[in-house]
Length: 111
Length: 114
Image (cartoon, each protein chain N blue to C red):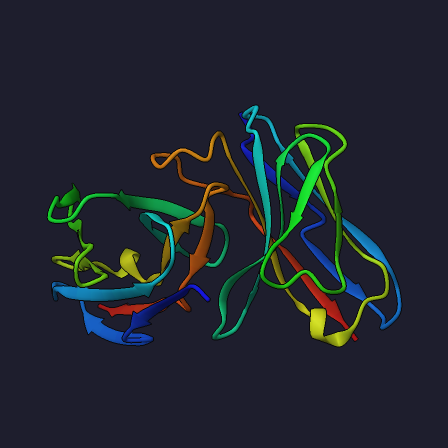
């Protein structure tokens, strides 16, 4: 059975802090790993990672994948209150590209 | 482009009642998915479709049926609702199964079964 584990499940930080969100996985037929941000409604896409060691970056957010150790991290620098959300990690597997999601990490950024 | 839309946004059902959730996408995507999201459980795949007229079971299919009669629509049916089906339901679509394509999500339907 495919498994995706995120940690920590929740954290509270203050504006300006840097946070690291973790995602580990045990799946068969790995194709890619995706990060989504969910603020009350639909998950919105952040990054897709397919190769080890190549950092994806968008503004203050960055992510990297380690296919040997089977994990990914999502870094957010200089956090803002608008970063408060649930961050979902998902792994795409198989010919039909099904996504297996982790339970999500709830990030709260206090002013 | 409306993207992925879901109808209704909220619904309250009594145990044993039936209903259909509608998902529509205007991006000409081939693949469509239904998920449920429960507190502390993440998103779990219920059913999915790889094209018009085809459907397949996901991780938690029991108690649900689906149909994909038109490429742009994916319907999720509950024949006899149970309190365990209280959840937020998300529909998603993807243009392809290729490695570099993400899934696009609708805004969700919050269903309560009493």
